[in-house]
Length: 383
Figure (cartoon, rainbow, N blue to C red):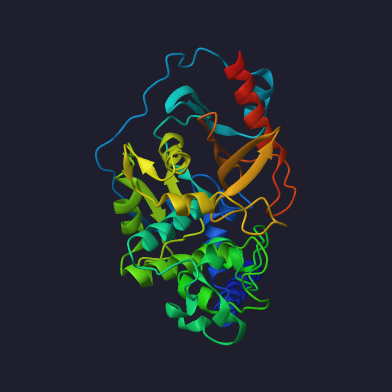
């Protein structure tokens, strides 16, 4: 018995020492990571993890439900799509044709109103809010220096960084986009309770504005710029700029770093549903108009949907760009395979939400599941 008590005391002492080391080395965010992710049986963020974090509510206004197409749900999923949905844990698959719901199905206990994490689809909203801030006169242009709003980026190469650089992923910072490493800055940003401190610690290591490098930190910095420029919390600016005007049917949630600091995780973490996510794709498809009103400047939308850098044709300003079989698609895209995929000429929006995607090909590379979700949707519509 004495031996057991001694072992228990040693374990308690070691545990206390570990906690002390985490705080001393400023890696105490790992405690939250273990509690919210790893102890839940996951190795990375998951669809319903928003319930484990602090959130701010985004109210909806007068709902504008999507009408059902005359051929609503007249065709079932192809065999290939059924297999993909099962293998990769799809929870929502929706096809919107000519602004009407042509097909929708939900899986694994989820329904049309279920909230799930947007992950990096949120980046598209933040870029759109930047365009709105320019339209509203809070920001001069894409060329305005980040230094005007964030003093930590006023020296050396950092002084060259523009707001447009942040939206197009060309900041030149040392951000490391590593989702599965517990010690990466991406993991720290997800769990740290003071995001501004994390962002202000970034260093500019290459000249900004010269090349695309996917970096969630760029979007987080952009959010901080928008809040400084507008004097509004980003979740409130989203509410008044897009969520209410676009007739979202459900209120939503946006994760914040903590109640104390109240800064949104701008690079991720809007909890909503497939058909409300689809509204933002429709806004860009329709050149920034909603019900005849110019909600977002059409010139900004057009610029967003073209590559900034010819050598990186996959990205514009806050949106992914893909050519498939001669058709140009743009998309909102998030971790584990959250997609709003739009083909403007055919007036098609495809939304897929789920637990995982096809095997990862690397950061910024299109995975095979995207092509499958597009191809099978067209097969269904052609039948």
